[in-house]
Image (cartoon, rainbow, N blue to C red; front, side, top):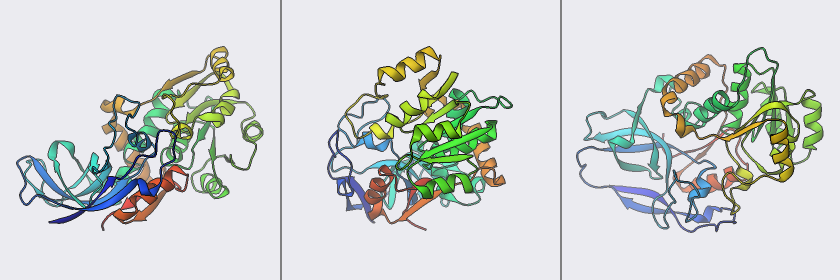
Length: 347
């Protein structure tokens, strides 16, 4: 059976920016017969995420992510429909997802890599399983709850960088739902600022590309920043941390401003920022959602409930076609997405 797949065509170098040409589309053939324990799936949606940038390097710099190999099929988060099964847990028509889904129109996977999903949890919006009711949603929810120390009634102010992205757009809303009295977002365009305030309920938003972030933070957070959900790192984070309160908390989620640089993760901080963290007793611990697997099931149920009740608004940027995976990845890394960047492979 004829199939199409995306392979890694070239590496962008450790300090280089990824481009669409780092990927190429090839024809591939599915096996004629399924082996026991395997499942044939048709891909509905594929996810592109900032963490994938390190998988483009020969060395990912982490112990829990392996590098993509040149001329081999790329993989990541995906959701699709079972078309054939030789695994007892799956039957034709089931909705399934995996964190190791190959970038293919169709694929044969080991059943142990798949998770069966209930489409009713997302009112039939399958792409939400890759965003708000998937890993980005869990990252936002558990990041806020495990590292943010939000206390209802404590009049806390939360700042979110990368606030219009897949994780940040959810983290700000969750901070508000969990009890923050004020939520401020930092993003890269006036359009995104408008969406954060008008659609997602942020109190204010800062365009770091054309506004003075330090001055706008002083205006928006007159009593200081109590909780900082950090998706970007770099100079923006140094500016936010400088205005944090005594005993505040940094949720160290991502450092996208540093992903194209050959630096360790988390990247080292300037001495002045380290001094602020030390003198103000601010916690800043690396957060990895995979360390909290026992809380994933309950977290996904909470997220789906909020989505169905309209309490958690979902933003998506959807690109159609497997041949546009490289374009979508490049755009996401340059901030071209509002909300979760998704590629729709089939209906």
